[in-house]
Amino acid sequence: MFDNHSHTQYSGDIPKGRGNSVRELCLSAIEKGLKGIAITDHFDIDGIRDGFFPPLDHDSVAQDIYEARAEFAGKLTVLQGIELGQATHMPEESHSQLASQPYDIVLGSVHAVRGIIDFADTDIKSMSKNEYIRLWEQYIEEMLDTIEWGNFDVLTHITYPKRYYLGNGITEFPDIKNKGREYFEPVLKAVIDKGITLECNTSGLRQAMGECLPNRDLLSFYYELGGRDITIGSDAHKAIDVGANFADAKEMLSDIGFTHLASFCLRKKDFYRISED
Image: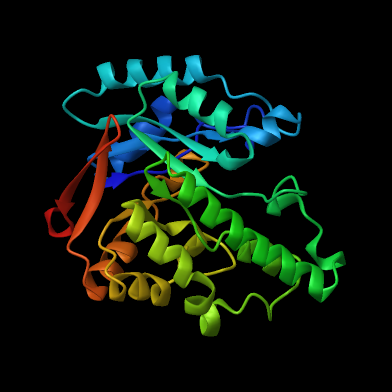
């Protein structure tokens, strides 16, 4: 199995001195019995431009990946990736960055919408109900814009803001349990139409949400709509979380009906059977 979403010490959202190296993430992946790992450090392009996040040292990440490939050859496939946030806020710069490195996999994320830095840094509890409902609607709109832009391989953690609504004490909205299909039907249909892979992100199982992003019902809905391109990512920000909860995710996806998982090499998609792992 591949972990297609992980972060090293270079990611701007990890405090200096608290992250793990590429090598440490690889060792954890081997210990967990994974076949491969994608190193996908954050590149939230507008947040970096505006000085809210430190620049990503692309060359150092790449060098560490090349060294890990040499060290772990025959034991682990190490993919060079990037998590590109808010690409449509700066599309020309996004295209330029993606052309500058031989990426294996590009994750497309929406961590923020125009007017905020990141959902993680937004004081949602101080907003009126109309304001935080509109913020959610804007998230859906910008995710659709990102899919239409389309120069990425995997759409990540599509219920991402929910964790920060919960963290701000807002428990009644968004009602993913009962209205998730209504919220995300346009998103899931657009992903299928574009041939983009959907991520089953296991980080929510380690957090207050207590479920994958997206949850089981939305993954089932995606399958019902005809979606078959799926991948699993831990969204690990420390080595211990590489491959975390993959057995649970694999069982859930198999139960829904998924038979294959997507993997990538130089941005070309391939599939392997879930039952192989």
